Length: 260
Image (cartoon, rainbow, N blue to C red; front, side, top):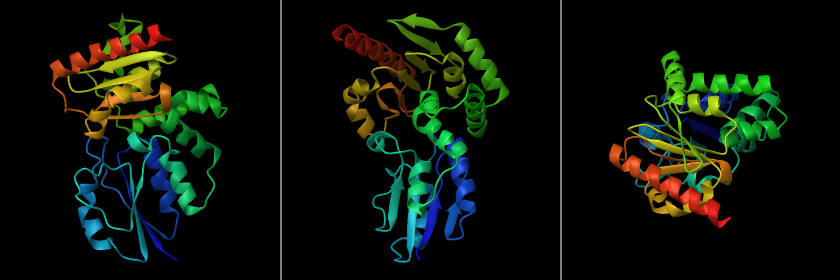
């Protein structure tokens, strides 16, 4: 039997559940560099790749790791993700369950749904309001959200604007989930800071087509279907460029609405 090696990506509730699941599997070796979304690069596991790459008896799985910093990956390396070009795939937790030929518990299914499709996906799974509240709270905590982030979210929301039918929130926190969770349900939401921007809601697929070059260039990322999200990688765009992107997205969403 082949040995499975898993390299963990940016920490959130799904990634913590993946780690817990894998730690109970005797044929799985887990490496966790305690990464965040911002630094979830395959390069951080370069020594592991060097040691175990191209060994026939081993399969290496990189979970939600950006590979743009590695010129080539070994033949026994497999990418597990559900963002950008892999957005049509199931959640990472579900993909791992398939690799290991195991079934997920109800709680794990809800965690997977949350990561793949946020609150609407959990609702489709029959999650109760309390289950949703708990999973969203645990997800924020897993991402390192602090009490100050929660307070900053409340302050930012109090200053929100409606621009072209889109709820627009400028914030000083880089934990946008604190804002999304408080404003849900929403149809069109745009949250930005001086370092990054994310659009959530209706019309996301058209935005991904428009910004396809930026996505291929690893400047943007997306997931969650047509009512999912499109975001900029933190620090890639200047504050002035983010303002321009904000206005461009609002215009594109409104053009789409008029066309419908």
